[in-house]
Length: 264
Image (tube, rainbow, N blue to C red):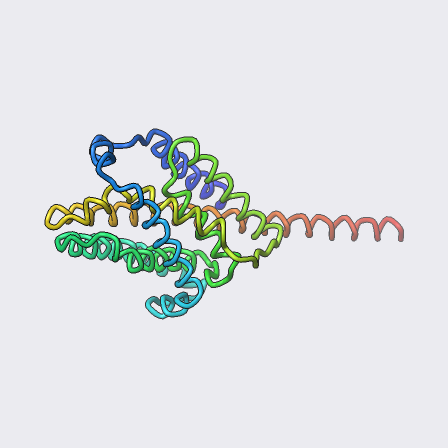
């Protein structure tokens, strides 16, 4: 079947990504920088990412939505093409923003802008694959995707599996999550802070801080690739489940018809 082979292709891409994440180690540069990073910087980064998420989810989703087109399902292929172009653009913009502020010795204040860019890109990907990113249920999934994209070692596998289980609960079993985002929001903020802490420290140094812009771009690219795989996989799994349900219903109808004829 078409969707079976499509799912296999996606899962092979994901497996390759997870293997790379499992092998990830702290770079020599990060280890050297580590000794100079102030103890409170990680908490500052974490708090700022968490605040940015809260503000955007509470008041900024619709504002971000008007910055890109929402296509009909029939135009999904064109939407995907646009979302990938947008990912490239947003990656470039995150680099420019981070580099520009880095040249001035400003590292932390670009976090709200960067967070909005990350969410904008994920919203486009979600919309392209037919998912409504506005609901609280979907916001939880988005935070899981961000966390999974930045995970390494054994955590990468664990988080990927957890994200798939959540998607199945929502798409196949109709679960709805309407509680506040507390833990998920905190974990996504932690993941971003951990992945960017050393470059944000460097970005706070005038001139040499331009290197910190690379961190923005690499993180954006990593999240975009992961989000595309996860949403694509989720769409295909949902279609396969619908096809199985239709086949099952058809079989039941045939069986009912057969039993009716036998009684006659």
